[in-house]
Image (tube, rainbow, N blue to C red):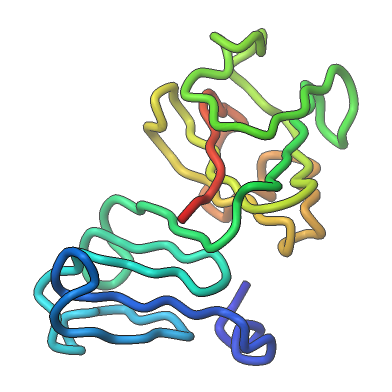
Length: 167
């Protein structure tokens, strides 16, 4: 979802504090911010997601690790398919899985995914490591027919762990 779409919807909101337990300097965001230090913050120790999915980055300019935050995840559901275009064997999930193979998925690859509700992060390797693909119900109507739709930087359909975006 791009910035213009977010502005039109007007529903995304996150509040951050510089100290733990929602103390210290505070700032609300409804749109992306490339560098939180330009707002006078050296660190973020508390976060409250009011609405929508948010991705925080370790470094300015959207660089580094990406812990993902969201306001709602209790009804999240995703269906994985072992062939493109939602064909072949399928598996429906409502929970986080640090290893898809350990839960019974027989391959290192997930050629297509349908996000039925919520938002998810799919990872290239077990243990939530490697490339990360943010999969949302609001993008592509939740339908990712092949791995190229996971992300503009998706080079493989290798997905070995997945988790809900949560608050």
